[in-house]
Length: 173
Image (tube, rainbow, N blue to C red):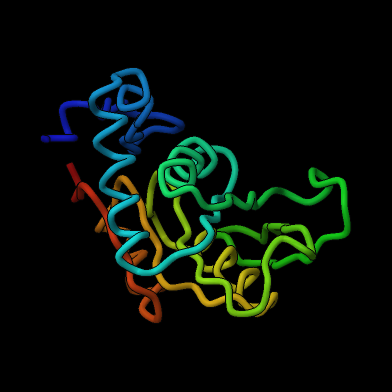
């Protein structure tokens, strides 16, 4: 399936010079959404994952159906203050400043095999921080899966310690 047909390219959003890759048309098409879910589920199964982890919000959207298909659990990664129980946190750098991600302290067990799922790989900072959260809890990140890879931003380089799986790439288009 040519997923590029299901990704809207929004020029100058959120600011001039940016081409925003909007994946919502994938979610609006049952066949495309099912295709993406199945491909990522096949990857996660091949890695022996017993839990899917996804950063908010689109990591929830793509990760939950994968977890359901594989009959395994899903763990959300959220912004600080959004999870009701005790959390661990990971601060990471942005172009201008820092951000923080949180996960419930009891979300993963030692030796869990995690595949992280998100919609888009850009610089890789969010994914790397989420991987670090998993590892702090003793889990092994066996793979990281994205629908879209913005290859110009070199996120795979930051995630070089992980098996990165992507379904479609965009380069400076």
